[in-house]
Length: 222
Ligand SMILES: *Cc1c(COP(=O)(O)O)cnc(C)c1O
Image 1: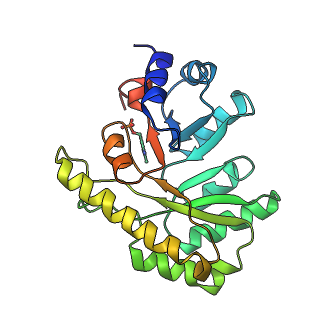
Image 2: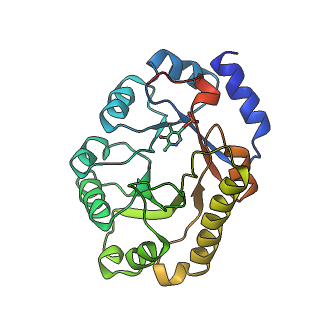
Image 3: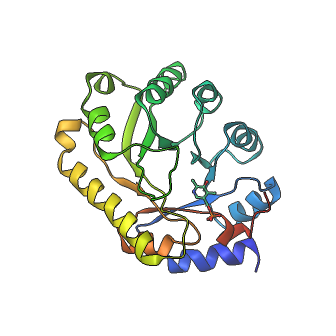
């Protein structure tokens, strides 16, 4: 199947309230343009410099999402254009994003990455870290960023029960935080979970943003 066929099939399947991020990491511009010409406007990349060079080449109405781990010294390269940063996992990183956003006279939307997988991943915060961050005075004074939700990745496994449990855990945390929007001075509305292999389960468990690469562009050969 072609990229546009894959996209159309996905779009027919996804409920209307689900935002589709087409994960185009490692793909050439011709592939991105095929998706663009089929109507896709939101693309996700996991390397800042690759995203920046694709931003230069692609039409200007594309929304760019950074879905990978971000090093603080790379933030400046995407601050002029990035529309959502999915994997923020420290106040230090948020402060850096705020600083670069201010230089560009922008407010950059961010998600906190919450650790839900069983496997020992280096990245992501636990629930308590997230409470502490969002309740801190420092966070409240960052005027050029806005935390709008959470991102999570389930364990890489065939065990659907395990995956469901992890997605449900993040949904519960998300709902809990939503009831505390006033304490945090921020309205959480985005729950980014689900990839090619597990997006249906993620949607069943309350995701409203899915990050899909190989089901659109084909298998990656890293
Ligand atoms: C690569 C990647 C995806 C997409 O993975 P597929 O299995 O190709 O759909 C989603 N999220 C993150 C964080 C990724 O790095």
